[in-house]
Image (tube, rainbow, N blue to C red; front, side):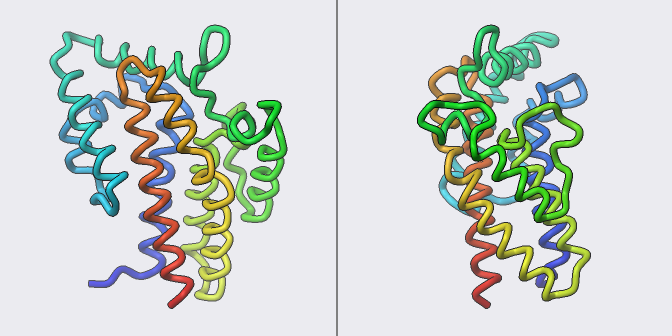
Length: 219
């Protein structure tokens, strides 16, 4: 059976919301199942490109190694990696804000943050309301896409197409334009490799989704 646009939109929203949450908050005990290789072997989106496939393979291998650790040691290692990469005692080793990668002065709250804020207003979503972060945090950019996709699932077809076009433009202009640099920093500085692999998966999802939206718009 061919999925309807509403079903596809809700599926996309779920994937983006999951990835956004993973990047916005360190793992807590309720996310221990994500540190099991079975979770990534059964990831709800089958690899649609080599980037996704490689990232899922790495996540399976990394979590297989983590499973051999006693007690809560695996969770603590992933939590520590999150802190080192995205928070940092002095400064994060892989800062998750677009402005720091796309402004020559490496500004926090640079133009990309205001561009994402404008996009949130354009989509009619408030993805940043719950989190005390600049709007161009990668996790918030993903949450924006989740909220926009969920809202699009409720519209008539003309509204789907308008939203799909805006979402495709947003993906190209924002998360897909800088996630590769963030991923490289996470790979260079992450002691576990979990978040570099998660960012690789996110990059692959963004590439898949960009192609999906373009295919829909060209039909």
